[in-house]
Each structure stands twice: as structure tokens, then as C-alpha cells.
Figure (spheres, rainbow over the protein chains, first blue to last red):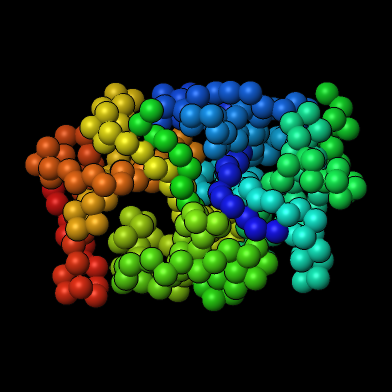
Length: 155
Length: 168
């Protein structure tokens, strides 16, 4: 169930294009491929790795985004625009058993066309959402079924 | 590429010990022994070999506020407890030029004893970004003044407490 590294963070913004442009121009990130979540996202890369995910924020976000990700905060400024921080690891089945044993609630999501299987849970002390990201193959081996896959959302 | 990878995030926790326990017990991160004495309470946690979560406490602390370049009030919740997101970077001169070209305010901080140089800036939504240049010792004269709103050089005064001396 070991988590191996920090994977990415997700910012929700009222201006996707301006935020993307800022990270590209100021920090030298590169816009790159992302799965089709049926809601607007931008993935920004350093080298070959997506490190920053952008999605819509504020008050008028789409239902698809809310269904898939929830929305913790409608903040438009400051670190409240960070929706979650993600870690990558191996041992999905063990992590699920571990969380279940501890009684920690979590949601399961899958991005079918990217081979990603995600667990979302809350740091209960601070109410910060944490994503744990695993290879989809692990879920297939363990015969796990997510509550929602990205392809179930309507365009 | 000057900014090379995502490194860590810092949480200013409502309850430092409980938060440390969450990351250790629920997520299985390991407590890192490498954290220097910053003069305020906190922890570093690692996933695998990578220190990727830094914790500080919401209990009022002037040194912490000075260090993080902002005041943290008690009661922050959710991702409002995230103080900053940090990246590793290379070539500080190049990065400074790039930031200046886009007219973004920045602060920098030098830890010559640890061979660490940092630049802090805010993204358009006011999220603090920290850039870490490992192994870099800059010439303070070359960095003073233009383009850097303020500069802080930290040196260990008595080997225990970290003191901050503001320049400019």
C-alpha cells in the first residue's frame, strides 16, 4: 500500500486560460494531454510528468465536475483554490483494506481511458482532500469496481 | 527546463499532532528526521524516499509567519490550510529573468550554509509557489534590489534557532 511520491495538485480557477498561460509563461510548464473527464480540465507538465491539473472553480462549475470530484470550496483566491493534492503508489487492494479497517471513508473513481484508478479521502483534522492514484491494472486484478468512471459522465 | 519537478506542499494544521498521525497511520508516510530547527514546530513526512508533506501548526507563532511571509490565523479549513506548493528548479538567473519578464513580484531567500536558494511568488489566484534551487549559493549583491520585492537571508545564529535578517 506504499505511497511512493507526490503526484500532482489540482487548482480550481475562475479563469482557466489565464491560469494556464501564467504557469506556461512564468514557470515554463507545458500544456499536455489529459483524459476526457466530460468537464473542462487543463493538465500542465514538467518534463514528461503532469504536475498541475486545472479545473473550473468558483460558483458556476459544471454538474459533471461536481459529480466526479465534488467541490470543497468556492474560494476564488489563495490556497482555498487548491482542490486536492495527489500521491501515487502501488498496492491498491491493501490500501482499500487498510482504510476500511481504520473506518476512513473514501470514494473510488476511475479514468478508463488513462488506466488510472483513484481513491479520494479527507484528512479529517483539516478537511483537506487527498487523492491516491494507482494503475488501473491493479483494480482489474483485484476485481474492484469504482462508484463512477469518467466515461459515465455525459458530454 | 528551469522548473523541473513537483516537490512538496506545506499544511498549516489545526492540530499538528493529529495531522501528523493521519499522514503516518492512514497514508503510511514516514516521519523524516531531516527537518532543520526552523524555530517553529512542525514535521516533514516522506512517501518512499521523497519528503513531500511539510506540516506546521496553526498555533500563533511569529517566527512561522516571518518564515512563511504571511500571517496565518487560526481556524483555516480545507485547502485553505495549504500554505504553499513547492517545486525543484535549476538555473536561478534564468528563472529570475523569466519571472521579471512577466512582471511578477517575487521574494527570495538564501541558505548559504545549506546550499539552498529559494524564490517565492504568487500565482494569479494568490497561491504561493516556492521554487527550490538545490546546491545553489547566489551572490546577494547580484540579487539585491531590482525585481525582487524583498530578500531574506537566513543563517543559523547559534546552531539552534534560525534567525532571519531582512535585506533591502
